[in-house]
Image (cartoon, rainbow, N blue to C red):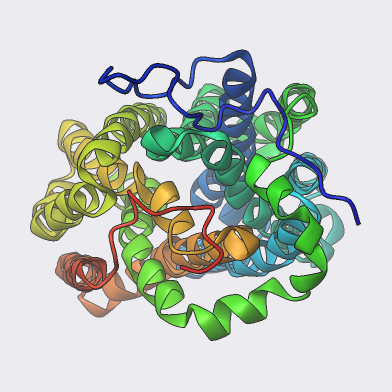
Amino acid sequence: MSTRTTPKSSPLPQTPAGGHGEPLKVPSLNTPQMRRILASSFMGSAIEFYDFILYATAASLVFNKVFFVNMDPAVGIFASFATLAVGYIARPLGGIVFGHFGDRLGRKGVLITSMLLMGVATTLIGLLPTTAQIGMLAPTALITLRIVQGLAVGGEWGGAMLMALEHAPKERRGFAASFANMGGPAGAVMATLAVSAVSTLPDEAFLSWGWRVPFLLSVVLVGIGLVIRLKVAESPLFLALEHKAQERKIPILEVLTKYPKNVIMGTLVGMSSYTVQGLMTVWAISYVVDHVGLDRTGVLNIKALGAALTVVAIWFAARYSDRIGRKPVMLIGILAGAVLAFPIMWMLELGALWLFAIGLFLANGVIQGTIFGPFGAFTAELFPTRVRYTGASLVYQLSSTLGAGFTPMVASGLVLAAGGELWMVAAAWAGAFVLAAVCLLGVKEGRDQDLTAEKM
């Protein structure tokens, strides 16, 4: 089989033109091809997470009243959060399946497939009849479509992140990889604002048809994303190893047998960011609206602003990770999370909208954004190119499943066990962050890692 060379348009680092003691310039990400790649990474991730977070928001406010009816309210919200968890359970499987084909056949085609799957599933959720109309078929179909969503988003992030990172010069790859990370909260902003807009409708209209509108809008977003994504070139690092595809028969086996420590440690580190996400952007929304009685629209608008702050924090954290390393930046966010767990839960208990806003902004902007900014490069640098899609996707999706997928259910159970108080939730949060800090210190810094190396 003949090998293919890296495209000329790829912005991989080149030998410096100068010499004679001239200072080296940091390679630029501002080329037409690189701008297209970063836009694709950001938009693809934003669209996928618009769909995924849209479901999470609806699970907090709608599904227990539409699909899980005739139940005790506490049981209904638990069942709604259980369907949310099902999607997170499917994410690691999606990461393995899409990672397998991404490592063997290429990143681009897999990313197009994942986006189409997500768009179809989200649109169909918006068209689902209610339990009152078709009985148990409604929640069954909802769970099925949630699984499809989980599979799709499981394949999206790893590919979107790697397309940016593997095209980028070494000195800028932390920042380049963060565009997929920034797309996630940007999608959350869009999803939250979409639900917030329809939440101003009277309750009857909101629960009958209003909540469906944001789901149906997914069709438009997916169309825009596909136009951008189809114009992006394949990863140059993948192309450099394409002739060895036959040697990469089952990438997941190599990941689990050769890099088990990286998978475990990376997952436990990543869980910290997703514990915050599951608590503050899903469970806390339900808690302050249904139990504390805060205004639904106001809470959703604060959530959207918090997600916007996450984007800003990711931007700065990723840039600094290219200067001082992934671990120091992430450790700042993890330590902040351990310290602020109890104060933030206390703010929720006090029941004031402005205190909820401060708690959410600290959680999203300071804690989650600082950890999540370097996380894309951090996971990618744990694995060699031949299995990087599978390995990075597995770590990321396990982190999200264990950190965010079960957190709303666990938090609801801890509140019941504590007699309605939140101290047990805060203790679990702080404990998860202490464990993440220990694991982070046990992982090798990857900022200067050679990603073209066959062995790592």
